[in-house]
Length: 370
Image (tube, one colour):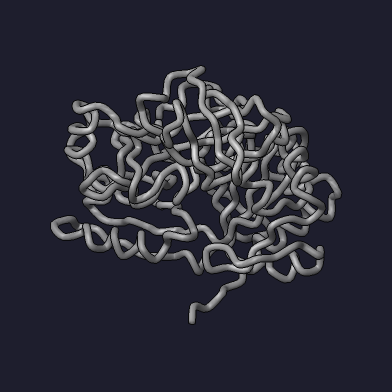
């Protein structure tokens, strides 16, 4: 029987009467005051999430840069120390092992932050790729807790409440800092489409940070329910939905994070072939014109033929529209193509649209150097 784990913040969630459910092997808060209220707090003010279930894997050694370039799709050689790079790890056939953030300390030290559901699989897969490389891959996921502070007020509140000035930190950059004599790592990243920060530290440090933010009354605790509605509106993928071991980055629409010209990486040849042959399926945005909610797993039709499946769908909180991301036959992926979604025994009309439903609100002084 699988053991369900608890994060170091679990007792905090109980004290706040959070709705708690199993997620990726952990008992996690799904909501506190309600998904709509939590979602809107992040879009307009500031919310915080316990994301201690995420995985932290270090790659160190003289070949660390060479290794990370080989096992991920994005390019790191030209990036300065202190940069965070989004990318994907692929199987040889081009489908996705996982998506991740790579933190570059220097050419010999990298931190890979991976999805909670994939930590064990990712670690094993990475170790299996180390033959021929002078690297040490080590899983430190149990050593860290993590809190995400998200929303337009996050920079101001981190300075006021934690006495940490992050005004010079750009999107997708990180710094090492201290809080109450504890070392912490802070990146200007998140999974909501809003400006914000993710803070990694030992369990005591993150508990103290959570208390400082909550006790202020200015930062609303948010659960995984709002985390999903927020990432969905910004078209940020969820593993097992918009990306998976059956979907490639090109099909998911993340070709901008695949750097073919950097040299060899796992899955490169398969993606080059797919690019040359043309895509047969693509992840697209869908909007229904009929009043219904398109949920994950519902079937998508065009011209009386099934053409795909909803990967994520909601009545969007920010827009009020019934929206979805769907994996469909590429022939029908052109914007404004008429489609319908089967919900139980009825069909509801809609159309293909841009899949970023709200504009990302990142703080970018210069080029993100993706």
